[in-house]
Length: 330
Image (cartoon, rainbow, N blue to C red; front, top):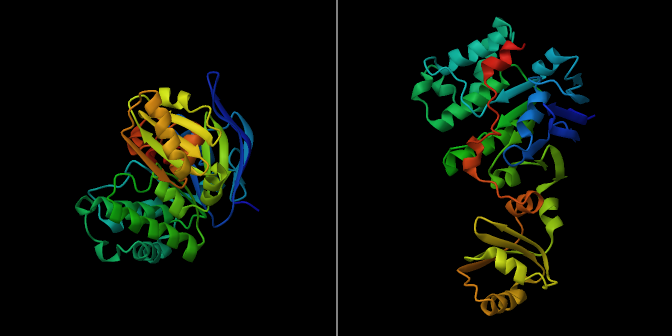
């Protein structure tokens, strides 16, 4: 039985369908990635799963609880780590967790033991009495994860868990996330703009665009589905070059983006000289050309026609689900 199960889940606003008949299942103990460009429907979809928004039609269950009729059961089953920080910087790490545990009804007799457990889990037990405003960005993120786990949730929602962190700290957070699943059996649903993060962490990935799931599989299967090799060409006239190459049967797909041309090509090494000859005949200067195996970035571009960038994480589709608003609806 899946721990998250949606059936034709739909949400419309004033005639606009933000989430369009989405049906998917997340297995217990799975790390599941949800990717999509700004405005694709990620936020609305997750907002329904955590009971912040009611669906227009369709149904969904989280840990066996219906999101419409068993909202309290859903909320007790999940933890959320928001993209926007929701810690009280004037309190200590321990005080932040104690407050959160009390709000979730964790009995006082169990609270101290649980706080000690989750602080140790994220390697902050030695800093439990330190004021949060003295913490680095990575430490705050780890404390946010600890707070999301304080009430023993079955499912943890992570909204851009490593956004803005340096690469080393980001990898440390990945290790904590993997350990949560491996050692504690927590099911994790995360949104991310880092394709490397999705590739490294996720058992499966769903790409959502215009409210629909347009691709869903393991990262490896999604990359294999493109076939061939990827050529990235930088030139002043990518549209013109794409038109000139339409007769090349070896080219499976061509996408123009950011003043560059991405091609999916069979036997790309053999095709590069022919492509350069065609560009030269059309008097198109090629600044650079690079060859690599398909990545999740290529998968995302193939299915959405757009690239995904870190700066877009702060755009219109970031979750913006502040913890106070979420709690007020309890």
